[in-house]
Image 1 (cartoon, rainbow, N blue to C red):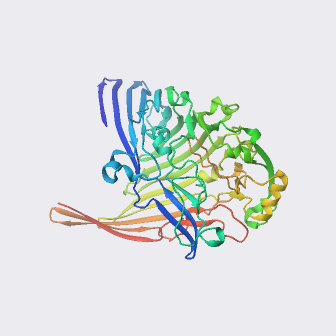
Image 2: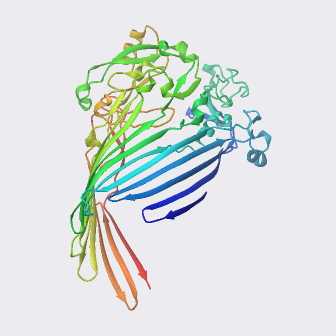
Length: 551
């Protein structure tokens, strides 16, 4: 990384120009396995599968970032302006490389990859090649000219970091699937000889001898099933970005005490989405299910869920050829958007006796809309494609303070109250025979997949977990864990020994020993099974001693 800047300061101006640049190289490798075959047994006497491995694999990617900026702080009477603009550029590529890579050849020889033949990958540039001009603006106004009341506002554009992520995604070496299973029919009643050795030609990926065909047709092949439209990889203003704006009022209440209330908004642009070129909306058939009767599902228990779709066997057999596009280039894709609105109230101050207090309340709500169809009509399922998290789920209460005591002693605290984790609502439709029979009766055919992942609860009253990229994952819930509360204390004592000073402290974390879930596995399975399952809880009460010696 390199950076530099130069400033020019006068009475009313503070002008600065500068640059920063970064060169990054990433290598990714999958280790060599000394045996490219793994035998699998259901019991010690019942072999049933063999897994073939195509390791090792190595890939290399390079990115270069450049930022050039200019900013000026300008004071006009009671108004202070911060004006800035920035040029952002990133270019990434992968160089010429081979499989097996040089490292694999050096250590294991050309025969290291038994099931994947050697091949070369030619260099590919501009994956991506982005140019962006981003403004950053700020203003502060002394409302009454007494320095006690200020109105502040900001507006800024920020591009999403990319690095070598796209170069990795388009590199054929990373498309290699390095393992696949195939059934093993060894026992005499299956047509085998019962010698516990898979008698078949593993270099033949079709069924032969005691082995069935490989389960993953992509095994050992560098064919990419996902590609990018040209305007997603290059251009000005193509990269995903976000706008951030805020307006706040800061007021001094008394000497050493102030409060601030502010409104914040963030919105995202240049969403991308993947369109499978081999299928379309006509390749999906509608169906419904009846939600399980379970009081934990609230009013949804036993109700009919419509608007569900499953792919046809013919379309599933076509495979995948995803074209990653800007969502706005897809029919109806201009509705896709993500927004966050938040409000903060904070205060801080200091009393004459040295007591300090601070804290406040922040709340916010995330909205996301993807109510348009790419391939599966279920994507635009009414009530489920428009995410709006409740403000309560984004509300946080935090306080901190310090109280000086006699004899160079001090006690300080931090308290926080946060929203509990949401219960996710993903459900595997068709996982039980009765439900599967109901679905196949409506379809008039067997399901093309073993089960379909659907969302039980509408997202409107729940929480949306959004991934900016080629996929968007949502989980909605009307239920949350109890709010998380935690109080931490620190007791500090200072001892003077000659010209030296010893500062010792004693910490108590989670004073009330509250136990709240911080991570859940909350996919619903069936009545009687745990829902949700707690995967992680906040740490229990913890005592900690520490010290510092200054001389």
